[in-house]
Image (tube, rainbow, N blue to C red; front, side, top):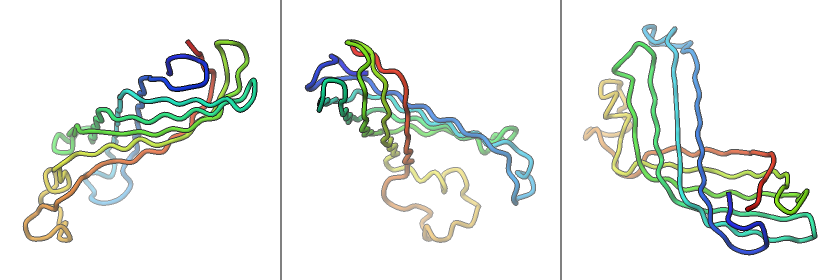
Length: 159
C-alpha cells in the first residue's frame, strides 16, 4: 500500500502472515500422529519507489524494517508450544499495469526475513535432543530466524 499513485517516492505499511500445518510421519513415535502448526507474522513500514516506463506500465519496489512474530506448536504437546518475537525486514519488487487512474493489476515478489537476536531456540526448547553440533556449552552465538519468499498478484488501488 503506497501513498500516491504517481511516479516517485512514498511510504506504506507492509503486512505478511504465513500459516502451515502438517501431520508428523516420522519418529519419534509419540509425535507421529500429531499436527504441527507454524505461524509467522510480520508488520512494518516501508519505503516505496515507483517508476512508470509507459502510460500504463510501472515498476514498484518496497523496502522496510518491522516486527516479526512466530508461533510453533504441536497439538496436544505443551512442551512443543512456544513463540518467539524479534525484528524483521522485507524487500519486494513488482510490475503493474494501470487500468484506470486509481486501479491497476500487478504481480510482485520478494522476501521477508525475521530474526531473533540471542535466541537459540533449539537448545532452549529441546535441550535433551542430542544436538551435539552446537558444542558443550549448549549455546552458539548469532541470530536464529526465518526467511520467507513470496509471489503475489491481484488488483492494486492507488490513493
